[in-house]
Length: 211
Image (cartoon, rainbow, N blue to C red; front, top):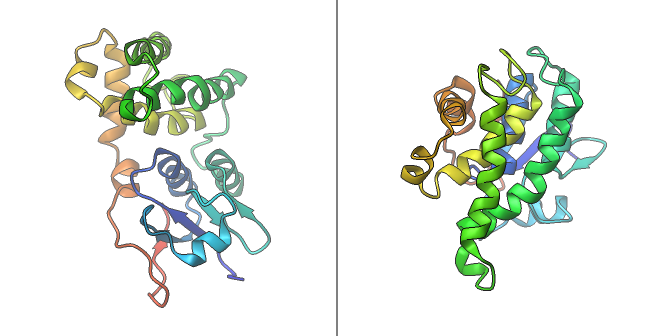
């Protein structure tokens, strides 16, 4: 068993992205192990029962839910007070991870769901995004002038939806949402967590990751 945290991750996965965002914000040092989803290392499969990223291997436990990894990281150190958010933040995350993510997948991966009304699914996703735009009116972040856990938890998924058709996304009447997303995409923390690394192989020197 390793005596330091190991994060198994895949750069473009929004779940892994938000875990890296929280870890970077916390400053907790972890060994980052990038994998290819089509060629998962045996060491990863032996660690993650679900075989999904992100998975955080700690000396005493394995955490394989992205939100739980975020909370763990920020409970170690939370200099930006990201955990200081109202109950509405947890409600937004629940809606993001449930109905919005389902509508996002039905829109992005339309060929996988031939029996689904894809136009309806995009409207469902848009309805959620409109509610975020209204919440962001007059605010830089979801709950005011400072970001919270909810911002970091939602933004990777809004980014993924926007990139399905960025021209369509930018043509919608949600200017606050677009500004929020673009501010995030230009942030130092996003650029930091999106650095491209070679896939991990056994025997390589550890790749250390922190904010």
